[in-house]
Image (cartoon, rainbow, N blue to C red; front, top):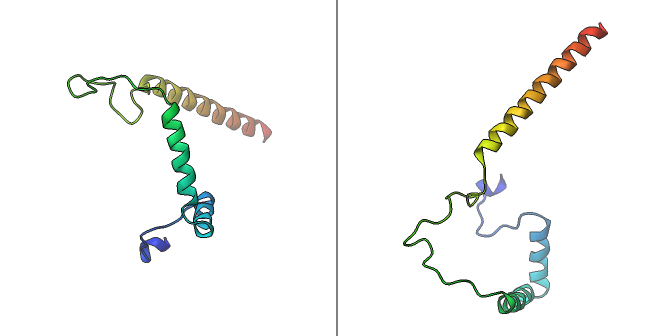
Length: 101
């Protein structure tokens, strides 16, 4: 809420961000050097990718933020099952409370 009334260009959110900010204050560019070395080593060891036309001339996988791995039918079934269990649970609680009186 404070950012809405007093905007800033840069804001640290959460404990890890604050720790990185303090580390940057204590040793400027140390984190950048460590990450740069890690990425250089990782990219040298990573296998080469296959050459392809990408999705420029042919459609790719199913679009969406999930890369086509989400199954909407399964999601509906889970929602229906969860709703059914909730209704049965509430009915059971109602019956139990009714018998207590």
